[in-house]
Length: 123
Image 1 (cartoon, rainbow, N blue to C red):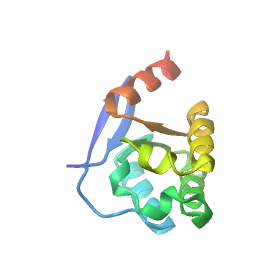
Image 2: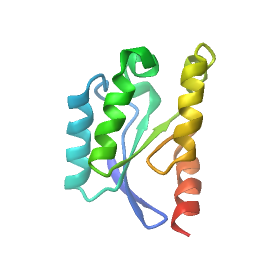
Image 3: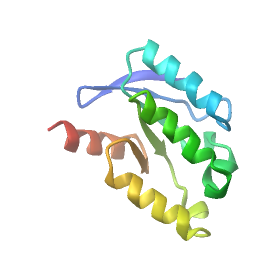
Image 4: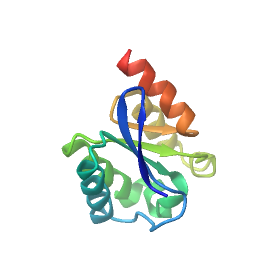
């Protein structure tokens, strides 16, 4: 079930593991609209919900989606183990590392890790 949870005073739309695959910009926009309607400032999406193309940077799917999140001021947390993707792509490893240094898009293990990061940025 997808529901808004307050984590360190930040409303986060936490998406269920099951559900539609996110494979294009419009999927991101639909999710952003839903989250905004519910008052969320961040969206946490299980990595398994993203189409495989998201993790291949040459497809530009990740860049296009993440740009939409940035344009609408919505944080994105990709939750779960993506090691099978990063092991095969130094570009993706670099992208994840750089994203995790910022304040807009994070690749994290789980909701608990998201809570830790949000706690660091709201303290």
